[in-house]
Length: 171
Image 1 (cartoon, one colour):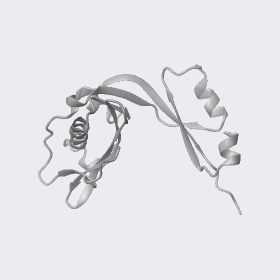
Image 2 (spheres, one colour):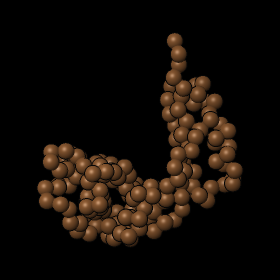
Image 3 (cartoon, helix red, strand yellow):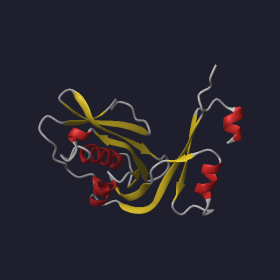
Image 4 (cartoon, helix red, strand yellow):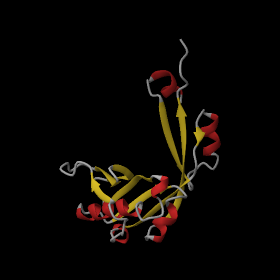
């Protein structure tokens, strides 16, 4: 922490612990070093094919990849309705492996409960398969965990982000 605090311009850093990390008192050590714990998440893993299924969404909702001409390791996906983005998520392929991560999945509250979260998940899974990915993983909140679990992903551990933010300087 002294390095980041005193020798860099880094304003924020995140250290993710896993439920199985050692030493057992690692969370207490991170708090003592000035980081604070954010809500625990569940790490899920499963076959991409389990998520690459048709998902029915309300009329007028479209799912698309932003900038589909790029073949990058990171793909940004959105669901749109009524001229606005109502859900989003990223696919990050892990180079040289059969894995990709599902990150940043979110749906506006007023659009939840209609399959709109699952639609970009399915689209990302289909894209992952086309890119040679077999397995997907996600660090998910308690809101998305049940959805991904019902879709075929399995819980393997937990993760807790510990965050440090530089205090603003006063002139």
